[in-house]
Length: 499
Ligand code: CS2
Image (cartoon, rainbow, N blue to C red; front, side, top):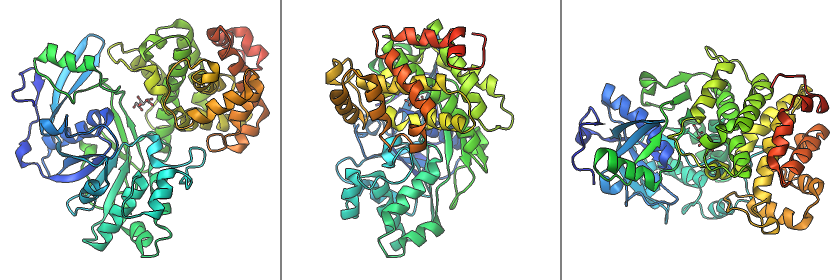
């Protein structure tokens, strides 16, 4: 328990004892604690109101053992190279563990006190098909929840039941705000929830259409999973133990579609932007910053490197990722008012160089199947439709494949992986063995990841197969070196570029 905080730790400027709940958050991981909860804390200091956050976890870890014991209060460190700044965040008024049963979560979500629910449940939490955005009716939790709607397990099932309870009790409208890195996250959330209720026939679908808003949002702050070393940093620098500390970079951004069902916190007064269309912002962020992270993560693992900052310090990989972003990703972006795309690329690469942010490549590579569509495949498809080259963007696609292939038993189980498609790719690796063309072909045939138009494209197939061949060889960085050599541009019919 944090009893007395040292003067060097900034404390909430408001009376936490007077803070009443007004919103809930599902998925109280490091990112929420370092992002939405901090914006809310800023807002409470500026303009105190009934906006306490009830934090809910429906998956591990238990919150009661960390945040619960600290009354919801925790330390947020901002770190940049040698600089450490600490602040206690006070916006979370209580925490609820709902891992064993949805009942505790439903009590909160259905409460008339809750006007807004924010979510960070990871990409796979939406139970959608990555390539299409539609609800995956074959997902085991969705099959369960459709058969047992009163005792749901999935995020769409829990939200559907919570909305049903709201409809049948007080009827108050609610805003459900997705804060995950999936494209048009509000549209996807609305769609998976509506898909759960469409056959219920009790008017719920219409009630949701009239009373629930699903704004899309772009969220950004690099926040690795908290490590033991972070907990020790707080002890060493500030003299107390905080089991719920989070560490983030100085940069933060939040762009929210202005589409609300009732009252919402005025996060726009403390640095967030309320806009009519989030799409240009989300493309910019997911294709540039996240695209670079995914690229560096899988290629970094293949190069034997541990963290993003180690990979970007490698001259070859840094050159590759910059060229990929400038030459192939940037031309796919929509104009964003007031933002120079080139400056955004440099700023993003600068953020990735921050050595105090220990972001493990394996963490970023986790669930890659749920990330590559928005980060890599969508820009590739945009380029192919315009007849533009995709040689560089195809390398991290092959990187994702190689990452899972080399983790399979058939290829020596080089590292443990966590991805819903890991078993499927391992099965393909088992069946096709060393024939790279057959391997790439079988993986490209997974239509829940690869849009059929993309998978059928001959240029894309050739680029991915060629890159996979190189990345699975004894010298994976040889392929990367080959891609940044000026001669490679000619061979691959790229416009001539300076390195
Ligand atoms: C990362 C993101 O693990 C990952 O997928 O790419 O969590 C990333 O750090 C955030 O989106 C930054 O805002």
